[in-house]
Amino acid sequence: MFMTELRWPDGVGKCPHCGSTRVVWLDKARVWKCYEKHSRSRFSLKTGTIFEDSPLGLDKLPQSGSW
Ligand SMILES: [Zn+2]
Image (cartoon, rainbow, N blue to C red; front, top):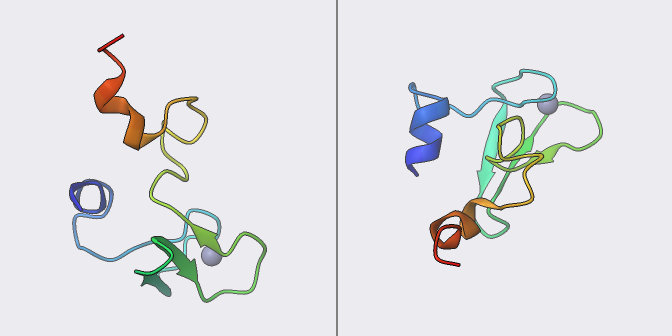
């Protein structure tokens, strides 16, 4: 959860699309959900970061230097 702490030091998630803090962490889906009514209401921690457009996902970074 260090990514959450890195982006949101206060521990509160924030929607990257509308900026609302009315978001909830869906533990089963491993995504955040925004309560505001707009498309793409679900987002992950990758959304809005440098990793969003990267071909390498966060889960693949540890192996990126091993090949
Ligand atoms: Zn939103």
